[in-house]
Image: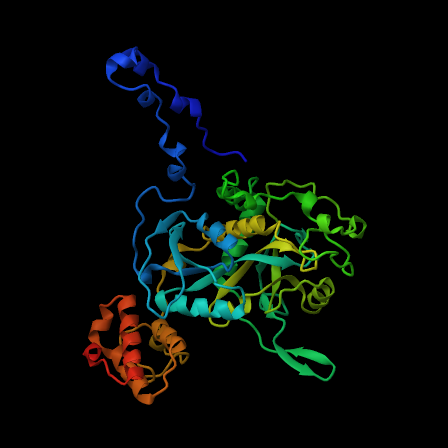
Length: 461
């Protein structure tokens, strides 16, 4: 992989001419020979610069300064996300009820919160997002970024293959994501119920703007951002492009021959592979497909089930977190294709798929209007909308509507007196001056006091 920086090691380790002239005999100068052959600072392992990492000490912003959440379930996805930041920020305090580990930073002047999951799935995703919104109450929307299983169907951008990217987009039938395993069993068939929210308009517009830009330039900005991964480093080889020679699609009815082994090691018959034309296009271009993504609790490793569900719902990709995330948070889903949801799936493409998904997500930040991302959320109560609690219900007071909603979703008020006291908390004048962490800490301690039978009256003053 070529780097845009061209340093010659010899220019650092050799002695400049003026040094030789001044100290032609180092022994007479009192300077050791080793001093004249110092390594450059970046030659030490702990001092090498990393593209995208801050050169200045990280800043500390307030909890309210962050507007975009980036959720990436797996470790490989979190590494890719971190390498896409323009700047990293100092960590901020969290409440005892928030168990997430956050990485904070910015991309193109948009402040972003990155969080992983302790395990994949819709329920963990919903929990992480609820806690994230409790700590960062001004988050407007999220990016759910990572790997997924592709459906090898034809779209306007060609056939879906490993290393491509699939992005959720509403169609005439679905909102962009489908919870395919949620419904009721009827006589002889399964009836899917419920619907997921579509991606927010700001992110759909950003995705369309990015698509227009990529169609009009010679150098793909998404591919350029994958180069931030520095796969030549010892810690990042798994993010390398595996090559089209390692992209194999087998017949739907052909099962993997030996569990725990690769197709080559397990003896899978190459004759069962589906012959597909090798894409002779530019390798420095990431193919992106937009459409419906399936979300469920199952790890799909059945090609026949994949094809059946894909035909029924018009699916392009399968994953396991979107349904939980979209339940209460406007998100766009971005998945790098790492397998074909069949019994032959393996981890070979995980790193590269995570990298292209993260690179696409990064590019969206360059198409989000700054004023949209940084504008505080409006309290619906102030505009006369009835989407929020009414006066006297969970308190109105000085706290923003989205903060009150976050508290409602985080705590279950088991006693009316607890609910009333928390309502009174919302009315306290000091709340308007307090930072977010102090507000939630006060509420958390007050509820805990109620549960112990002791009322923390000092925080009601």
